[in-house]
Image 1 (cartoon, rainbow, N blue to C red):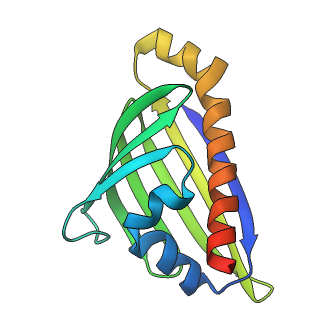
Image 2 (tube, one colour):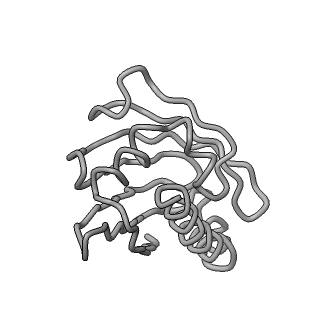
Image 3 (cartoon, helix red, strand yellow):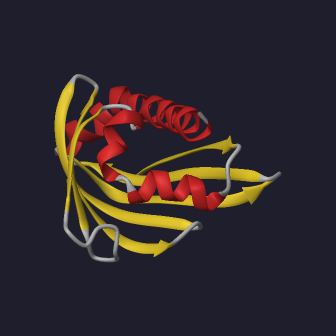
Length: 145
């Protein structure tokens, strides 16, 4: 299992950051690095609802399905993803100095057996880390802008 965690301070309230990041899935390609397209169920983001995400990472176009497993408005969003990389993505929104510390924690495992694990260690993990860091920077710019 690979674990990636990154965070950023955003000078807006947790409710504002959460609202933008979670309740507007149509904006995901605008800020989440690598996301090419997204579709969501009618009940999104309720627990049990799903997102279908197409993204590019390490030169590959990948499909993944995220199922919301926990949601507390303004505090946390947790989704379980299945696809080439399967795992649990946890987003926390913590009040800090009049703004928000948003943290992304992703535990995942690459498909493809031994070759998938090698590809993860050599390429995918670094690319995912860069994408997550860039995504948080993009989110910050949009929410603060």
